[in-house]
Image 1 (cartoon, rainbow, N blue to C red):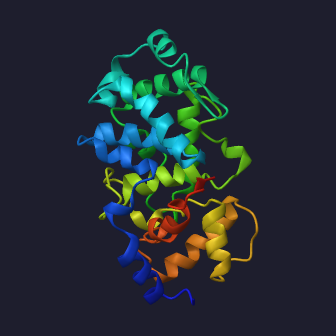
Image 2 (tube, rainbow, N blue to C red; image 1 turned 90 degrees about the vertical axis):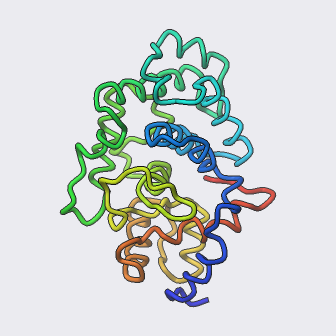
Length: 254
C-alpha cells in the first residue's frame, strides 16, 4: 500500500470507531463524564500501558476501583499514608504498589496545586513551538519533581519516544469518535505520534521511515510524514493503524 491520504482515510473510516476501543486502556477514560476524572483516569491508564493488554486492563482496574465515581476528587482528599495502604498489594510487571502510591499521591498534589493536569501541562506549553516535545519534557519534569515513581513516567534526559505520555496527550487533546478531547488549550496540530514497536513496523512497511529505533527522532520523523498529509491533526490515524495488532490474540502494547 502507498501511504497516501486516501489510504489512511480508508483505514480511519473502517477502524476509528468506538466498538474497536476494547481492548485498549483508553476505555477507562470513557467510564467517566467529568473532564477532571477523565484526565486522571487517562494518566493512570496511559502510564500503565506497557505489557500484555489483558494485564494492563486488569492493573488499571485495580488502581481506579478504590477511587469510586470521581478519581480526581478522591485523589485530592487522599493522603500518602492512605494511598500506601490502598496499593500495598499492587503489582504491574516492574511497577510496585509503593510506586503506585507515590504516583497517585502526586496526581492528587498536582490537582491541588494547579487545579487540573491540563493546567500543569500548559505551564510549559508554547503555541509557537512546532510540536509539544518541549512542553512534554516540561510536564514530565514538573510531575517528577512532585516525587513521581520512575517506572511510570520517563526521564527527559533519556530522550525516548515518550510513547505513553504522547498516547495520553492524544487522548486528552484530540476529539473524535474515539479520542475524548478533554483538554481545550493544546492544538492537535502539535501532537507527536505515540511510537511503539508496532507503529514503527507499520511506518517502515509503508516507507514512512527507515529508522529502526523507537526514539523521539523516529517519532518526530513519522509525525512529520503524517503532518504533510493532515497538518491540523497529524496523529489522527494512530488509533486506526494500530487496531489490527492490538486486537490480536497475542496483542501487546510495548
